[in-house]
Image 1: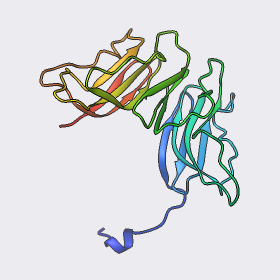
Image 2 (image 1 turned 90 degrees about the horizontal axis):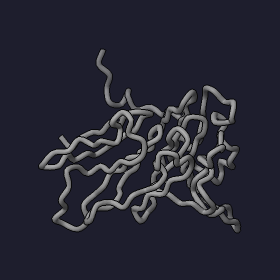
Image 3 (image 1 turned 135 degrees about the vertical axis):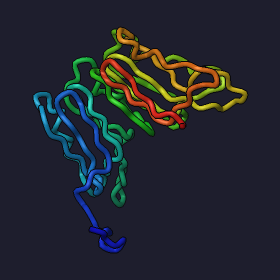
Image 4 (image 1 turned 120 degrees about the vertical axis):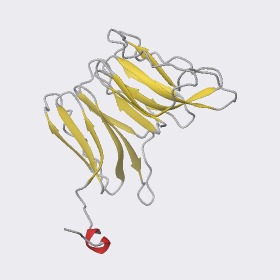
Length: 212
């Protein structure tokens, strides 16, 4: 059956704009900017905070093992103001994985098993939570490069980097740190360099989409 372009144009207020799967729960952002979660909720990880929908819009959501963090946008009411910071976290916080710090503002976030990372507007990466494998201890990017994306895995973290001071010499534009028992931080290297446009970190592995 062939449908016309006009017939395919339809509104969907409950359609999903962003989706993230955690340990035993999943969270999503609807196209109307609201958040919803389902699954295991023993720590409240599947219960988003009750934010005023007239002020707050959810922009990005990241599910960890037993915690969830989201990036939000606040529109102050007439004569009012918005709290400092654009990150809201909920669920298990035994290792401060749901405590981004007062006034934290990020352009991108991702949640690992028991840690969380965010990319700032100045291309810095900040992480919080469990640091038993140095997954929260962010290294400096290579000379001439800056961070452009972040992926938090089980007990490791990876970041996309971009060249800002040519010529940039590197074997890949991904930098990883933390646990490496399964080679999850061993970025494939080559010359010319492997260049990735997207990365995602699992518990014991990492995947990337290359430019080709």
